[in-house]
Amino acid sequence: MPALRAVAPGSDPASPLSILMVASEAVPYAKTGGLADVVGALPGALARLGHHVTLVMPRYRDVGPVGTARHHLDLDLGGRRFKVGLVEVDVAERYRVVFLDCDALYDREGVYGHAGTDHSDNAVRYGVLCRAACEYGRQLEVPPSVVHAHDWQAALVPVLLRTRYATDPAWRGVPVVLTIHNLAYQGLFPPDTMRALDLPPSLFSIEGIEYWNQVSFLKGGINFADAITTVSQTYARQILTPAHGEGFDGILTQRRDRLSGIVNGIDSAVWDPDIDPWLPAPYSAADVGPKREVKRAVLDRFGLPSDDVALTRPVVGMVSRMVDQKGLDLIFEARTELMALPVSWVILGTGDPRYEAMWRALALAHPERVGTRIGFDEPLAHLIEGGSDLFLMPSRFEPCGLNQMYSMRYGTVPVVRATGGLADTVRDVQSTTGPGTGFVFEGYTASAMLAALHAALATFDDRPRWAAIQHAGMTQDFSWTASAAAYVQEYRNAIERRQRVGAGRGE
Ligand code: ADP
Ligand code: GLC
Image (cartoon, rainbow, N blue to C red; front, side, top):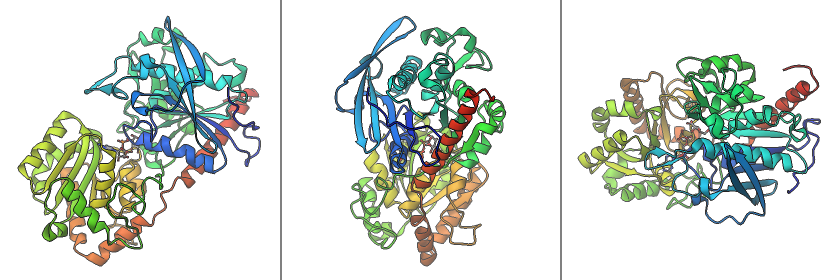
């Protein structure tokens, strides 16, 4: 087994940590949403701060050729034996990815499901991810200083470390930090999952992983993690309330001393209009002029008119999972008024068939002004960010949200609802004294969204003011550096806390 660098965990605030990260998706290997962007970028940022990161994730079919397994784990679960290959890839200095190679579980179409249906064995697929990460970590010559698990798919790691591996010397003193990227996805499975994953029946309780007579991976993670983070400070507060707690506000409130919010950064090597390979013309805060060429290109791409008259009309972009979380029901309600606005629309997304059908129908009804692409298309997402004037995110809730930050970086002014990370990252033009960076509305109503859009369109005609808003957004620092440092602090606090537990000074 390869050795992570030896460190005395937590003993010295400047000492490098070795972090074992566990997640279900990461750019550039597999992506269904923002989780992949975060898990793809955070390890690099931590490594640049001098820490060592090993990310354990499944090798899905679409990961492509990454090498062959040189080590194997034999995992027995629920009467089945899984032979899991470990494919180690050194991605950068101090950053290694370990892919779990197990064709029976991961070599198939779709990350979590296919054709609108979840894979029926997801509990086992992610149960194996968690077990394999625990086994891998304990066999390392030098154990990790801390484990960082992301979302429900990795949330059994804290459960396993405090139960199955509780007396394992390799894991003694090693804390687990759990990051919740979206509380709405709780990893809920039927009770017989306990047997399928060899979990002790005693864990099927309120203090364990039982939730309304189901197994919840995420609840287990919340109960057993040493520290819980979520991806913005506002969302960290919101999930303590019944309105946003998704049924977990009670247990989160009990554990609130362990809960904090760390806002996501963005990967400025991937999302920078000056070097973005998917834009036909590079531009930057110093010279936004070529953005007009990108606007022409995105209109062309969607088959919309791109003559001089069309180019003076604002383009509103959306790149989104088409689900209620993202405010698609508000858009549905306001579709007639939205179509009456003097703008062009460029829309990319997949999700609820009802909303996909709505955007298809709007494109048919307004072929000159609405372009819709149903699907997942990373290059097109970049072109929309670059070519739009406005970006709409009317989310019902938004743990952090990345597209509003990409938009600001691309001089595309976001129109967002004041919730979660949207509230924390966009400065409202209408209520700040400085130039502001976007248009923010409070109420989850069609009229509030329309009012914000009207305000944005009125401002669009005031060119110097618009340029100042664009500039303010483009020059903000959304890099990962500060957030990675905040995670390091969180890791060190968790290490200290776990050492106190080990020394018998209580939780
Ligand atoms: P969430 O993770 O809740 O979907 P985020 O804003 O955090 O929302 O991140 C979404 C990420 O997924 C962004 O990088 C966005 O560009 C990308 N994305 C969403 N839908 C699509 C799509 N249909 N095609 C390409 N990229 C998409
Ligand atoms: C989730 C959230 C999104 C967040 C992303 C990355 O998918 O819905 O708001 O930005 O995770 O943390």
